[in-house]
Length: 373
Image (cartoon, rainbow, N blue to C red; front, side):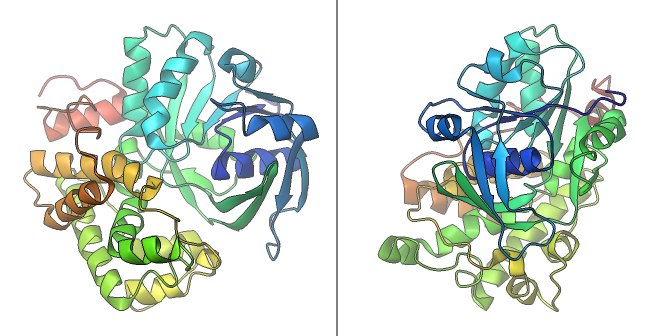
């Protein structure tokens, strides 16, 4: 993109998308905003932007972020954009790839915020199936950079911004290219090696489904009237999280991917330190004030189980890694919401990895082609 300041298109006008759009606008970037439905866009369009609240955060300006375009038309939203920041539930990634495919142009960068597990692989596969002619670069963030909540129509609050967020491109050798483009707006983005590493370092797999499953009765009794991380995670719950985390790290080891433990990730992302995972969680000021979901039918289950737990379990089992605790959480989550979350999940078949050797998987994510065994 040379010396030209990039124009962003944020796809998704929920808690995260409105936070990112407002913050980028307050940083001085031109921002377009896409959302599938009109409901959330109408007040933003009427006001001409989004009000951003960030009390207590020195590095986030409070104020009004003007939005150039707020549209349900992907052609209109993508027009003129250099970087497309997808801030949608992972189960919408395939849909948004289909929506964007006819309107993408050469040189655009698409970043999934976050990709969960296998997001870039799925997005790339959909574009191939759609025979998209544009030469675009697809990448995924390991986690979402903000802790945020929409508070009113056209208003959002940012509770915290992560210190460091790895980003990886598909293919991996173009990761530095993506990071250079993003760092004009986000110095927090750092190279994440490849999409296997960002996918397996998806710590939402650890913190989201298990905590909600183990707090199901409290959620339904109080309608989420408690702090999700600081009150929903007790020492016993934290021990279950450690088991899930251990299995995630083992899947990474089988693939030859160095995966951060959840405790180390909390220190890097939030400077939260402790002797145990429980102590590290309690030390994280970024979690203060984040309330629990009002229902168990929430993205922490309906998104994170099929799009995070399922692909890790599927990969692990293909590679001979036992994922008993992950499977238990997935089965309990399916029972709680009355859905077969495995059926909708990103299995190795859906990611195009079934039957590939470890060498072929590594070559696919680094070079874009699996080659021969």
